[in-house]
Length: 89
Ligand SMILES: [Zn+2]
Image (cartoon, rainbow, N blue to C red; front, side):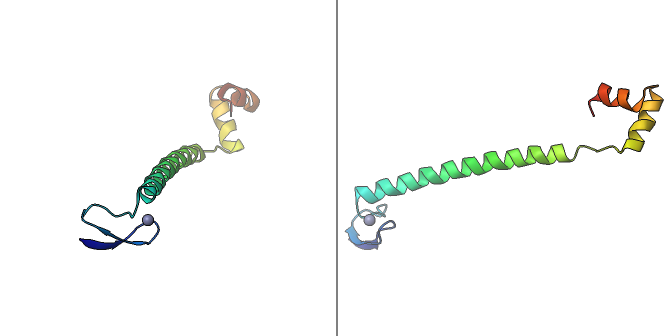
């Protein structure tokens, strides 16, 4: 016999089972629902951070200045405008 506090409602209960940590099936159900919610939250956080990483990559794309673009355009015998259109800058 062992006296424990329920992890969900805090009620004191007596059990023989060393694995029993909830006073009732109701508290067990609440606990498993919470765990489900937490794993969903974790999945969502992982999804969000993968999106943020993607955005980070986008931001790291080198931005060329107008001067640099016109130099590159001249090398290809294009005007600044033609170069912009060709490379969708
Ligand atoms: Zn309980």
